[in-house]
Length: 429
Image (tube, rainbow, N blue to C red; front, side, top):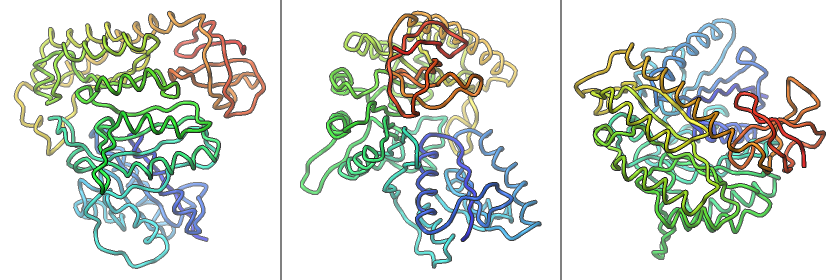
């Protein structure tokens, strides 16, 4: 049997698509290789969001060029980087045998099994499932692409315009995941809360309605999460569903990017500082137990020191327990490349370093407030440092360590007693 090696980079959607590729290859009779050096076929599922992600792929391609000098290997590059560069990649990296765009990723099985390839798919095709055998958490893609065209973002150019998955197909996958013992799911989309599916008879399913139906169909699935919503599409209807449906995790990842209205306008985010803060207030008023995660960027062209401090003040108000922090990174083909007032690398790095320190103080403040609570925890693994301890995650995506000998995949109640960095220590209730 042919052996394959698969590497996925970047966002959760890429991870989900990588799982689907692996599932399809196993279904076609291939087996996973123990290492890249042992494989007959290697697939790199790539990311283009930041230049650093593409640089990493170029480095990996050098390794695979070396492997190909030692034994025959079919090398396939797919994902967003493949979509963006297409034939230019094969010119720059002749060791690559196939460059498979995002819309054609189903053809990887045909390549692996020697079938004739069909025409290029013009639209995105959703996989039947992204389940990884044995896991208790699973991704469920519900839409692909983005219509927002933020001035710094390459995603609309490589993923295309928004397309929503058939609601019944989503529900079918969720029923399947429930039958496999999955305990939490994460609904995925580049702009997940813009989901909008129209049936042939004109019936419309928007994101709040889909989320409500999913909760009704989820069976033994404990938590339903979603990534990543856009603040401008975060409706009061959605807030109400989150508040009233017990299965929706009360932990929201809401990208901010900047806390200054002028910079947000340059970014084409289509909300102001005041509108973002109003959204937080409405969510907190309806869901007092809510916690937040955030994406935030510093060093956008022409950002002043006072505008940077506006971002810090919003983060202080938001009080996140998770944050994804980075500085502006030019992406060829986006509008921001031509913007005036570029910030030098030293200043961007210094602002990011200050942001990280500032946010870590917020982490400590907010996480300390939660000491003494009793939380439901999904057990994920045995601790590597102490085999008598189990590790798990709460509804709020917090890591917890506690003494126990119980099966992975169990959901238990744990008293949060102390904080060890970003991990809580607790006692089983």
